[in-house]
Length: 308
Ligand SMILES: [Zn+2]
Image 1 (cartoon, rainbow, N blue to C red):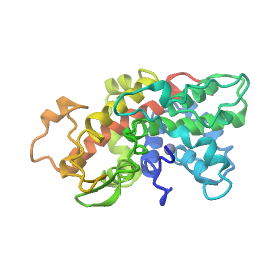
Image 2: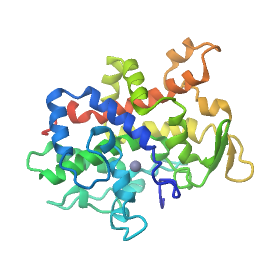
Image 3: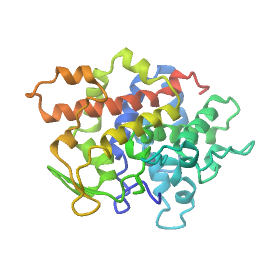
Image 4: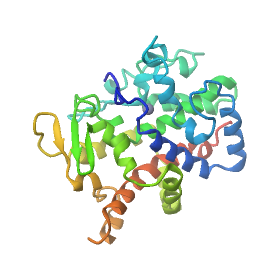
């Protein structure tokens, strides 16, 4: 996969808005002492790629990757593969999708690890660095910035699946109220925009809906498990519910596809919904499921009791 992001609009990637929502909700759940430490780590960011708050730092990894995309491509080539894991629809081969799962050489910072590495293993590597008391302050900041972002990316189904189409970047879609885009862009950005409101409003709405049981369930498992969940959403919905292409690689998505029945995610809530439920609410509920899941996982810096 050459690029996971819409080449002509690099600012849009699980969009900034999606990552900001994630950051805001993760921030909400931080213990005060952890929050203070997180803020002090992020305050050391002198790249000026984002402001130094958690919500904007959650977009940092995309901006870092794209900062020399049209120039030297050093950062771009080093980190672009780290944002996804291309599990193929016809069969998920974790080893192949993770480039043979390369091990970091002893003493190597994860931020300087091999360019061919997948999002699952980068989450593991950066998590280990946050846990380790001897990690240097600069690397600790990199680890936090990458982790805040990658946990989000992993939950975008098209960052954990592939149909030999660059994770949906070679499929094009139109939908009611949505102009023609790549399928990847729709999942990154358009469906997020349909939640309505700004990132703070969306975050507050979602926080109000997260139950302790969900938080606990979503906090379990390992990055490879989370990737397989995203992959199964991609199989059942993202790719699985695409209509027949007309012409090749062009899809006219129905309102139903966009509003996304949440049956496979939350059957009980789905059964409670009546036909009078607005489409917008249905969309919100679906996105809530997806968003809040990885949002809470972004909070693993607290849950895992990392040495911050
Ligand atoms: Zn990304």
